[in-house]
Structures are given as C-alpha cells and as structure tokens.
Amino acid sequence: KAGVTQTPRYLIKTRGQQVTLSCSPISGHRSVSWYQQTPGQGLQFLFEYFSETQRNKGNFPGRFSGRQFSNSRSEMNVSTLELGDSALYLCASSLTGGEQFFGPGTRLTVL
Amino acid sequence: AQTVTQSQPEMSVQEAETVTLSCTYDTSESDYYLFWYKQPPSRQMILVIRQEAYKQQNATENRFSVNFQKAAKSFSLKISDSQLGDAAMYFCAYKREYGNKLVFGAGTILRVKS
Image (cartoon, rainbow over all chains, first blue to last red; front, side, top):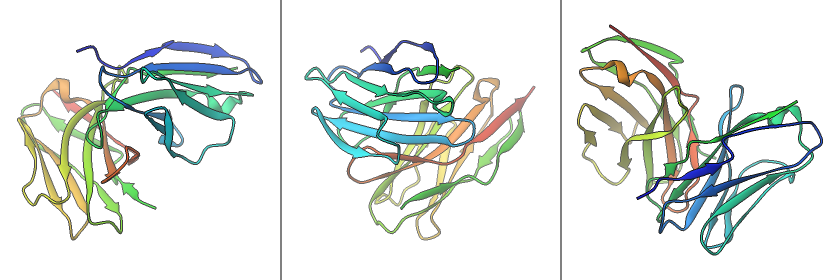
C-alpha cells in the first residue's frame, strides 16, 4: 500500500500571499489530520477531517482552513501568510480511532 | 485540556546500551491512547509503539518497550541494544479514545554514540 503523500514538499511564499497544501491519505483511510511543526511551538494540531466533515479543530486563527474531498484527499489553505507561518506541515491519515500514519510533510517558508 | 510533558530535551546512549525516555501526561479521562513517535532528520514521523490505556500489560515492539503507569500518568520508552539508526527526535503523544487529535510532548533528541 502506498503511504501518505503530501505535495508540494517545499514551498516559498511571501507575506500576504496564500498557499494551498495537499494530502493524499493511505487508500481506505477516511480520517485526515493536519499538524504544524515549528521549533518554538513544537507539534500542534490544526484540524481533522473525516468523511468530508471537519471533526475537530485546533487553536489556530481563521486564516487556516481545510477541506476534504469525497476520495478522502485533503487540502489545507493558509491565507494572508505571516512570517510565523513558516513551518513543517504534516498530514496524517488513519482508519478510525487507531494509529495515525504521517506523510513526509510540506516545508513552507514565508519571506 | 490534555498536556504531555517530556522533561529530557536531549539524551545520549552508547551503541548496544539501553536508554529510557520519560513522558508524563495529564488527563481526566480514563480511556485513551499513548504513542511514541520517532522523527529522524528526514522529518518523517514513524510510529514506534502504542499503548491503550485500558490494557494493563506494557506494550513491546522488538527492542522497544514501554513502562505505562496509569495512576502516575507516566509513559516511558525503553530502547534496548541501541543502534545508530535509533538516533532521532522522539515524541510522546496522547490521543483521546475517540477522534484523531494527537497532543504531543516537546520531544527528546536521542543521540547514539558508536
């Protein structure tokens, strides 16, 4: 089985722009979760989607949004980028409430 | 809100020796999951071991084992016969029984000396 894939792997944007990151879960997995990893704040939960519905949301501003498609692929969008949004964004998929499998991440740099 | 604390920012171990990484957590729930994830320099998060809170028996996976003390809210990871490939950042994580939100600790960098 193919693992979780994330595209793009690297991204450079400037302040004020917006960005869309994509995540394709393991085949058959219906839950997709997103995490932000920074040196200062560590790993923080952004949101989780299950069957196209946001099931849980972390403590991030409304500039961070996401969605899930009928094939379980998920996208997250960050609008009006700030320097502090520079981070590794990780996506994870799971079947139900069990273990989560992570993708390789998207490294976002905001200049 | 649940919190996870890893009090060791960095640990070192000699190759072939044993090392224990500490983790404590805070929750008011009785059913939950605990995990140890490994993140090597490639940044790929790899699941090392999982523990269901309702299970009294400590989980083991080859050279990796945990010491789960539910009353003390402690969840330590023991790595036996350490190998150079074990060098990585290790994260302890908590998950409620339902849903998939993981709460991570700050991580422990493990260095393995040859």
